[in-house]
Image 1 (cartoon, rainbow, N blue to C red):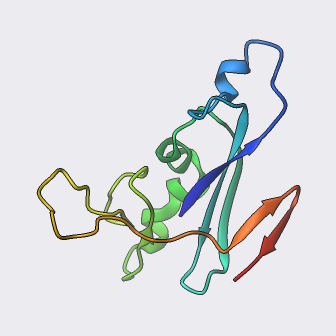
Image 2 (spheres, rainbow, N blue to C red; image 1 turned 135 degrees about the horizontal axis):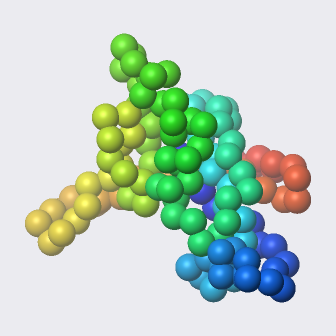
Image 3 (cartoon, one colour; image 1 turned 135 degrees about the vertical axis):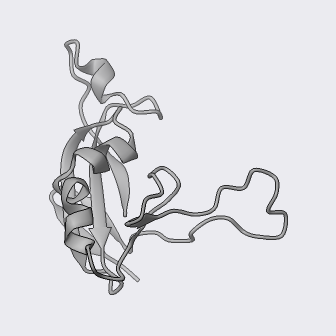
Length: 123
């Protein structure tokens, strides 16, 4: 699971700050979840650029239904450290200076790009 920013035109009213992301450009967020075979299983779009990944997940339909949907299974979501570690979502270890020889990240990127309204896959 991860999210990305899709650049938009700058709003001219008070919504400017709501849609300005941490990289200082206006955007909407797109959250994507795929399975182990890279098949998209959930897309949540049109969140303001200033919204944190963990908040997008919490407010998304998947975030609100996940524990119920995974109850009694051995399945979990994998995400980066921007998301909360829960019983249904696994995140990388945080290196607080105590994990000297361990690489503490998940080397994962979605194998597609979003172009306009279509997804383009690549290997």
